Image: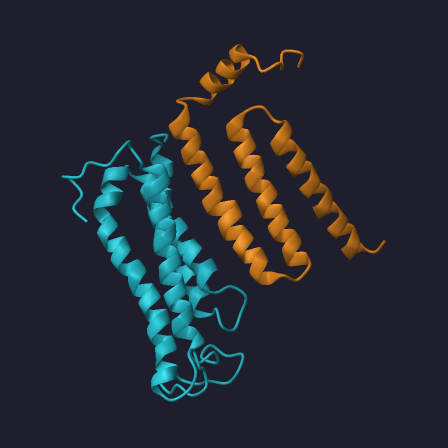
Length: 152
Length: 98
């Protein structure tokens, strides 16, 4: 990439605002357009912008591959345990109105989704880490990986 | 034709223009940016037809991540765009009549 100072500074300063936009899309996913996938893609694109602004090694140090894998699996586990909570409370998988933990607001509000809110958060975390993994897989691929350097 | 359908017509016309320009233009980096403009225009088209979720997905994935991945692949394959264009011109896929 080009070593422009404007590109470097702007890409670093814009990252927290893009992450806040993605978190807003995720948290309002049950009530407004958007949801886990869209907000997760926005957060992953923020990471790609961050990694393109500085060099690849610093970005990889800031967010290692093993951390990406752990958080990605945590997103799936949030989804799964939210679904299993419905079974534990005596109803179907992913049952919504019987689970008491998420606050049940009025429909159309921010908390009107019930269990849709942790599901959307889990999907958002998973998709954000998947987009970051896509960046690792496609962009930063430099030949065959060395087995002694990356212990996974 | 009222004003609303006229604006829809203009957006659809711009959609066709960007889709054709992404194919016709010879510079690869320009093609990527025009494809990004096409993707954003089709997101606006989805928004006109009230498919809000699809519009947001298209704006995030099509205009954002796909463009970044294309530009990254473009930067990894060849050094500079002028080298690539000259290289293709020297290779000559039967396009010397242009």
